[in-house]
Image (cartoon, rainbow, N blue to C red):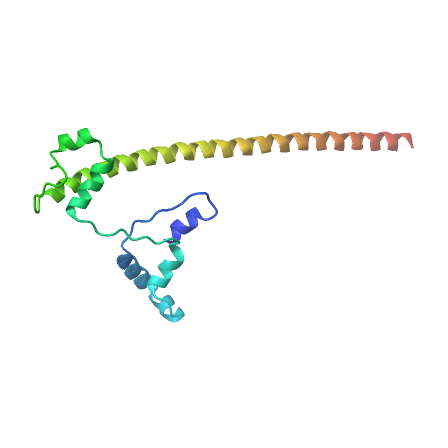
Length: 164
């Protein structure tokens, strides 16, 4: 958590965490046992300082999960997957189909998001490099002008010294 906070500090990025707070709180409390106890803080208070906008997803039934997946899934993929239509109840066996299809769709979406982030990162990096190069050119030009002025002043002093 500390690394994520440090990596995103003073950047335009938003970090989304999908975590089970019970597990994270236990990990925080075991990692910072003495420090937390001495400060009178528990893992939930520590986590509250890191997570700015906590949001809990409500549990959904198998049918609600199926409807959710169908709402954004490619209808042709759903037909080919053998997933039963909404409203059809197959106790104990419909859930794995929904979960597998949702997992595959999530992986595709994550890969698309990853590609978009890479493109955005490369564009940002290119822009920053361009700014640095432009700044370097401007600095080089200023240094060149300063060098020329300094040389003129030195030459003038030499002429003045030779004349006197």
